[in-house]
Image (cartoon, rainbow, N blue to C red):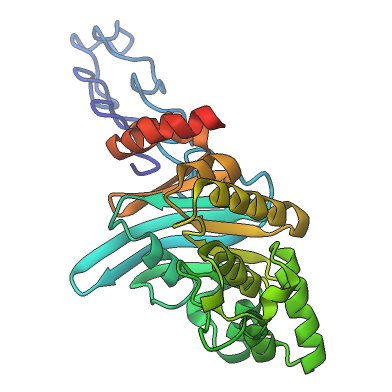
Length: 325
């Protein structure tokens, strides 16, 4: 609803009530000081039901698709405005407004086919947005090229859904790839950094010399996270980080993500369908609905009236996750 829209049936500001005379007209009988017609409002009075000046329309959301304002003066690390993603005639997202603030963990959820991974790939520049702007760390990514683009890439990290590790390289060599690309350090220093990242994600020291095929699914997830952390990013993107893990492994991974957020001050956008992760680690949740996005805390979304949101958060799995918390 537009800022100056009035609820149904309300008269516009300054509009004369039904039955009132035009400005300057004399009442019946020609007496300028005679009684007002029945039902007429005093001069200057606003119509019944009109909103106070500057008030948000009923049901209106703050800027950024949020149900409630949560910035608290923090920097906006990721900002989407009017973003559309489209493939041919198929519009996946339309007019997305979405903010992520420094130091928070935001979960990105949505039904099957809602375009969670598509949106993530668009944000990190693997897909082009058809319309709108995406700002990472204050920079419009559509206008970045060369050195400026590489600088932003060096301040972000990505863990892809299936790890996306180079199968022919060891874990340490995988971690070194972005360091060599962006930092250009000597071999010894890069090896030391790789060993540090392996330890940071809770893997045994000898993991660095192993190939991805020699690791379990959970270990590959952590190795991929270690590579995403190689350049000490400010903003971390995680795509389904607990998918395929057993409940114990998923819980330990959630604890790792939360610990990294606290110890390193990371800002994290996490695509997930795992309700346990949403309850355990996320400060806010962005829900893709009907090609748009709604953002709020768990409490705000539990009270949000939408069929998919009710089914997702209030269904059996949602109630079980809430009970665990």
